[in-house]
Image 1 (tube, rainbow, N blue to C red):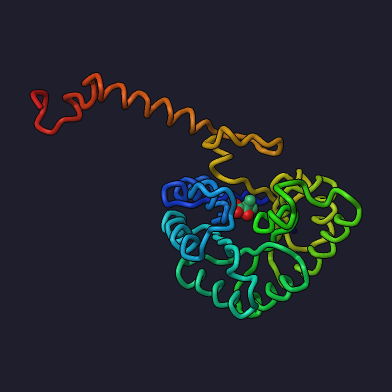
Image 2 (tube, rainbow, N blue to C red; image 1 turned 30 degrees about the vertical axis):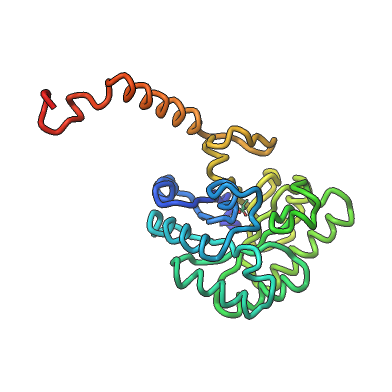
Length: 260
Ligand code: KIV
């Protein structure tokens, strides 16, 4: 798609019913992100997410979207300890979920080597640079990366090293637009941006944010495409009211007819 100048539309997903919607809408790449930790499981970071969490949710997504290219995040501590463990965990994800690829965060030499080893095992790897949420404490918070010249140069070098190691695509999260464009132009593989501007080869958003399920989270880079929080709240309030008032169920919802 990059060669043909077509932008890649990616979204995260964590469950069966939304996966069906994403596949019908023609999303190019579904990512079962470890943002699962925050937007589904209610943790305040991605760090508590386990391999079993990822496998359970990715399997549900696969059942809902059997035809869409599916990438699953390797969660924190599933690839950092050793390349052997990383290959085993990446392989387990593919075996148990039916996904096509895994994603890992970072571009330091050790992570690049781990990516290479996973790729050598025949498992496609999606990279992730910029804001890498599994390193939130080392980064000092969820903030824009690559703002100064030195860190921008480092990010570009890490992107090239990951490409050389064989990754097929690279998420750029929360980096200045001009830097994301420069990285995208320097790589053969596609970049997928989130908070990284229009210079990337594709875009990804966290699904609950994109469909307005998370009204407390309104960063500048986010565009909200549906108002599901409002629609669900209004619907559920109406349901509670009607049950209390005896208006639901009506005769039309009652087996046995109008006398029900
Ligand atoms: O976990 C996730 O949802 C991600 C995306 C933000 C790219 O990594």
